[in-house]
Image 1 (cartoon, helix red, strand yellow):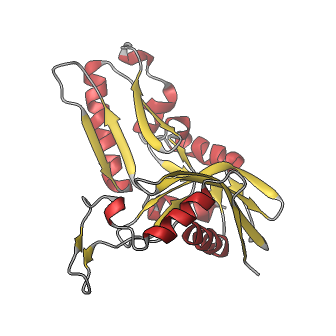
Image 2 (image 1 turned 180 degrees about the vertical axis):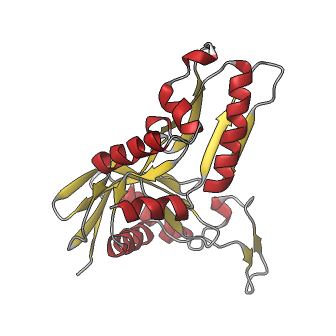
Length: 241
Protein backbone atom coordinates (compact mmCIF):
# COMPACT_ATOMS: atom_id res chain seq x y z
CA UNK A 1 0.00 0.00 0.00
CA UNK A 2 2.95 2.37 0.64
CA UNK A 3 3.76 2.24 -3.09
CA UNK A 4 0.28 3.56 -3.85
CA UNK A 5 0.89 6.57 -1.62
CA UNK A 6 4.24 7.38 -3.23
CA UNK A 7 2.72 6.96 -6.69
CA UNK A 8 -0.05 9.38 -5.73
CA UNK A 9 2.45 11.87 -4.39
CA UNK A 10 4.74 11.67 -7.42
CA UNK A 11 2.22 11.28 -10.21
CA UNK A 12 -0.93 13.06 -9.07
CA UNK A 13 -2.03 15.23 -11.99
CA UNK A 14 -5.42 16.17 -10.68
CA UNK A 15 -5.96 19.93 -10.88
CA UNK A 16 -5.82 21.70 -7.52
CA UNK A 17 -7.84 24.86 -7.05
CA UNK A 18 -6.74 27.14 -4.28
CA UNK A 19 -8.64 30.29 -3.43
CA UNK A 20 -7.94 32.93 -0.77
CA UNK A 21 -9.69 36.16 0.20
CA UNK A 22 -8.13 38.68 2.57
CA UNK A 23 -8.81 42.29 3.60
CA UNK A 24 -10.89 44.45 1.28
CA UNK A 25 -7.84 46.18 -0.15
CA UNK A 26 -6.36 42.90 -1.32
CA UNK A 27 -7.27 41.15 -4.54
CA UNK A 28 -9.25 37.93 -4.68
CA UNK A 29 -6.82 35.24 -5.75
CA UNK A 30 -7.69 32.07 -7.66
CA UNK A 31 -4.92 29.79 -8.88
CA UNK A 32 -5.22 26.42 -10.61
CA UNK A 33 -2.43 24.07 -11.56
CA UNK A 34 -0.89 20.69 -11.05
CA UNK A 35 0.42 19.28 -7.77
CA UNK A 36 3.76 21.11 -7.81
CA UNK A 37 2.27 24.44 -8.79
CA UNK A 38 -0.40 24.00 -6.14
CA UNK A 39 2.28 23.40 -3.52
CA UNK A 40 4.13 26.59 -4.44
CA UNK A 41 0.90 28.58 -4.32
CA UNK A 42 0.02 27.10 -0.94
CA UNK A 43 3.43 28.10 0.41
CA UNK A 44 2.92 31.66 -0.80
CA UNK A 45 -0.58 31.76 0.63
CA UNK A 46 0.69 30.55 3.99
CA UNK A 47 2.92 33.60 4.15
CA UNK A 48 -0.10 35.82 3.51
CA UNK A 49 -2.09 33.95 6.12
CA UNK A 50 0.66 34.39 8.70
CA UNK A 51 0.94 38.08 7.88
CA UNK A 52 -2.77 38.77 8.18
CA UNK A 53 -3.47 36.30 11.02
CA UNK A 54 -6.00 34.44 8.93
CA UNK A 55 -6.58 30.73 8.57
CA UNK A 56 -7.37 29.35 5.12
CA UNK A 57 -10.06 26.73 5.02
CA UNK A 58 -10.45 24.86 1.74
CA UNK A 59 -13.48 22.65 1.13
CA UNK A 60 -14.97 20.75 -1.82
CA UNK A 61 -18.72 20.71 -2.27
CA UNK A 62 -20.43 18.41 -4.74
CA UNK A 63 -19.70 19.23 -8.43
CA UNK A 64 -17.75 22.46 -7.85
CA UNK A 65 -14.98 24.01 -5.81
CA UNK A 66 -15.99 26.47 -3.13
CA UNK A 67 -14.11 28.32 -0.43
CA UNK A 68 -14.66 29.90 2.91
CA UNK A 69 -12.50 31.89 5.30
CA UNK A 70 -12.61 31.41 9.07
CA UNK A 71 -12.90 34.39 11.38
CA UNK A 72 -9.59 36.20 12.11
CA UNK A 73 -7.62 34.42 14.81
CA UNK A 74 -4.32 34.95 16.49
CA UNK A 75 -1.65 33.11 14.51
CA UNK A 76 -0.61 31.20 17.63
CA UNK A 77 -3.99 29.45 17.57
CA UNK A 78 -3.45 27.98 14.10
CA UNK A 79 -4.07 24.25 14.31
CA UNK A 80 -1.06 22.10 15.15
CA UNK A 81 -1.91 19.80 12.25
CA UNK A 82 -1.57 22.64 9.73
CA UNK A 83 1.52 24.07 11.40
CA UNK A 84 3.24 20.68 11.52
CA UNK A 85 2.53 20.00 7.89
CA UNK A 86 3.74 23.39 6.70
CA UNK A 87 7.01 22.78 8.54
CA UNK A 88 7.36 19.49 6.67
CA UNK A 89 6.78 17.40 9.79
CA UNK A 90 7.43 13.73 9.03
CA UNK A 91 5.11 12.88 11.93
CA UNK A 92 2.24 14.76 10.32
CA UNK A 93 2.86 13.18 6.93
CA UNK A 94 2.79 9.78 8.65
CA UNK A 95 -0.53 10.66 10.32
CA UNK A 96 -2.01 11.71 6.97
CA UNK A 97 -0.87 8.46 5.36
CA UNK A 98 -2.30 6.42 8.23
CA UNK A 99 -5.59 8.29 7.95
CA UNK A 100 -5.61 7.61 4.23
CA UNK A 101 -5.02 3.89 4.73
CA UNK A 102 -8.00 3.75 7.06
CA UNK A 103 -10.37 5.75 4.85
CA UNK A 104 -9.58 4.94 1.22
CA UNK A 105 -11.84 2.29 -0.31
CA UNK A 106 -10.32 -0.28 -2.66
CA UNK A 107 -12.53 -2.10 -5.16
CA UNK A 108 -11.41 -5.09 -7.29
CA UNK A 109 -12.59 -5.48 -10.87
CA UNK A 110 -16.28 -6.45 -10.88
CA UNK A 111 -18.04 -8.49 -13.53
CA UNK A 112 -20.49 -5.65 -14.15
CA UNK A 113 -20.40 -1.88 -13.69
CA UNK A 114 -23.72 -0.02 -13.58
CA UNK A 115 -24.04 3.76 -13.93
CA UNK A 116 -27.19 5.43 -12.57
CA UNK A 117 -28.71 8.52 -10.93
CA UNK A 118 -27.38 10.89 -13.58
CA UNK A 119 -27.56 14.61 -12.89
CA UNK A 120 -26.72 16.45 -16.12
CA UNK A 121 -26.30 20.10 -17.03
CA UNK A 122 -27.18 19.75 -20.71
CA UNK A 123 -26.00 23.26 -21.55
CA UNK A 124 -22.49 22.41 -20.37
CA UNK A 125 -22.57 18.60 -20.70
CA UNK A 126 -21.30 18.17 -17.17
CA UNK A 127 -22.72 16.63 -14.03
CA UNK A 128 -22.41 13.53 -11.89
CA UNK A 129 -23.60 9.95 -11.48
CA UNK A 130 -23.34 6.97 -9.17
CA UNK A 131 -21.97 3.50 -9.84
CA UNK A 132 -22.59 -0.05 -8.66
CA UNK A 133 -19.84 -2.66 -8.91
CA UNK A 134 -21.76 -5.93 -9.19
CA UNK A 135 -23.98 -5.71 -6.09
CA UNK A 136 -21.81 -3.17 -4.27
CA UNK A 137 -23.19 0.38 -4.29
CA UNK A 138 -20.51 3.09 -4.20
CA UNK A 139 -21.79 6.03 -2.17
CA UNK A 140 -19.50 8.65 -3.70
CA UNK A 141 -20.76 10.44 -6.79
CA UNK A 142 -18.52 10.64 -9.87
CA UNK A 143 -18.30 14.04 -11.55
CA UNK A 144 -17.92 14.37 -15.31
CA UNK A 145 -17.33 17.21 -17.76
CA UNK A 146 -16.78 17.90 -21.44
CA UNK A 147 -13.34 17.59 -23.02
CA UNK A 148 -11.86 19.30 -26.09
CA UNK A 149 -12.34 16.00 -27.95
CA UNK A 150 -16.12 16.41 -27.78
CA UNK A 151 -16.43 13.46 -25.40
CA UNK A 152 -17.11 13.67 -21.68
CA UNK A 153 -14.68 12.31 -19.11
CA UNK A 154 -15.19 11.40 -15.45
CA UNK A 155 -13.26 12.14 -12.27
CA UNK A 156 -12.69 9.75 -9.39
CA UNK A 157 -13.90 11.14 -6.02
CA UNK A 158 -11.16 12.76 -3.95
CA UNK A 159 -10.24 13.53 -0.35
CA UNK A 160 -9.28 17.20 -0.17
CA UNK A 161 -6.82 18.49 2.45
CA UNK A 162 -7.22 15.60 4.95
CA UNK A 163 -5.90 16.57 8.41
CA UNK A 164 -4.91 19.92 6.97
CA UNK A 165 -2.56 18.48 4.35
CA UNK A 166 -2.28 20.79 1.29
CA UNK A 167 -2.97 17.94 -1.13
CA UNK A 168 -5.73 15.80 -2.62
CA UNK A 169 -5.94 12.01 -2.60
CA UNK A 170 -8.14 9.50 -4.42
CA UNK A 171 -11.05 8.56 -2.15
CA UNK A 172 -11.47 5.21 -3.91
CA UNK A 173 -9.10 2.98 -5.84
CA UNK A 174 -10.47 1.07 -8.83
CA UNK A 175 -8.79 -0.96 -11.54
CA UNK A 176 -8.12 0.16 -15.10
CA UNK A 177 -10.73 -2.38 -16.27
CA UNK A 178 -13.32 -0.69 -14.05
CA UNK A 179 -12.31 2.75 -15.30
CA UNK A 180 -12.67 1.56 -18.90
CA UNK A 181 -16.16 0.21 -18.18
CA UNK A 182 -17.23 3.49 -16.53
CA UNK A 183 -15.93 5.49 -19.50
CA UNK A 184 -17.73 3.17 -21.93
CA UNK A 185 -20.99 3.61 -20.02
CA UNK A 186 -20.58 7.38 -19.83
CA UNK A 187 -19.89 7.71 -23.56
CA UNK A 188 -22.91 5.53 -24.32
CA UNK A 189 -24.99 7.88 -22.16
CA UNK A 190 -23.79 11.38 -23.07
CA UNK A 191 -23.51 11.89 -26.85
CA UNK A 192 -20.36 13.29 -28.40
CA UNK A 193 -20.40 16.86 -29.72
CA UNK A 194 -18.10 18.62 -32.16
CA UNK A 195 -14.48 18.67 -30.93
CA UNK A 196 -12.34 21.79 -30.89
CA UNK A 197 -10.85 22.69 -34.24
CA UNK A 198 -11.89 23.17 -37.85
CA UNK A 199 -14.44 20.79 -39.36
CA UNK A 200 -12.98 19.94 -42.76
CA UNK A 201 -16.40 19.16 -44.24
CA UNK A 202 -18.35 22.19 -43.04
CA UNK A 203 -15.51 24.68 -42.61
CA UNK A 204 -16.94 25.53 -39.19
CA UNK A 205 -14.48 26.12 -36.36
CA UNK A 206 -15.24 25.06 -32.80
CA UNK A 207 -13.45 26.72 -29.87
CA UNK A 208 -13.77 26.75 -26.11
CA UNK A 209 -16.16 29.68 -26.48
CA UNK A 210 -18.55 27.75 -28.75
CA UNK A 211 -21.70 26.83 -26.77
CA UNK A 212 -22.69 23.18 -26.57
CA UNK A 213 -25.91 23.96 -28.46
CA UNK A 214 -23.81 24.89 -31.49
CA UNK A 215 -21.66 21.76 -31.18
CA UNK A 216 -24.47 19.18 -31.34
CA UNK A 217 -23.84 16.80 -34.24
CA UNK A 218 -27.28 15.20 -34.54
CA UNK A 219 -30.01 17.23 -32.82
CA UNK A 220 -32.76 14.58 -33.01
CA UNK A 221 -30.45 11.91 -31.58
CA UNK A 222 -29.25 14.31 -28.88
CA UNK A 223 -32.80 15.14 -27.78
CA UNK A 224 -33.78 11.47 -27.80
CA UNK A 225 -30.83 10.53 -25.59
CA UNK A 226 -31.48 13.51 -23.32
CA UNK A 227 -35.08 12.43 -22.72
CA UNK A 228 -33.98 8.88 -21.96
CA UNK A 229 -31.22 9.88 -19.53
CA UNK A 230 -33.50 12.36 -17.74
CA UNK A 231 -35.76 9.46 -16.78
CA UNK A 232 -35.42 8.65 -13.08
CA UNK A 233 -35.03 4.92 -13.76
CA UNK A 234 -32.28 5.26 -16.38
CA UNK A 235 -29.29 2.96 -15.84
CA UNK A 236 -26.61 1.49 -18.06
CA UNK A 237 -24.55 -1.62 -17.30
CA UNK A 238 -21.20 -2.57 -18.81
CA UNK A 239 -19.67 -6.02 -18.41
CA UNK A 240 -15.94 -6.20 -17.78
CA UNK A 241 -15.58 -9.97 -18.21
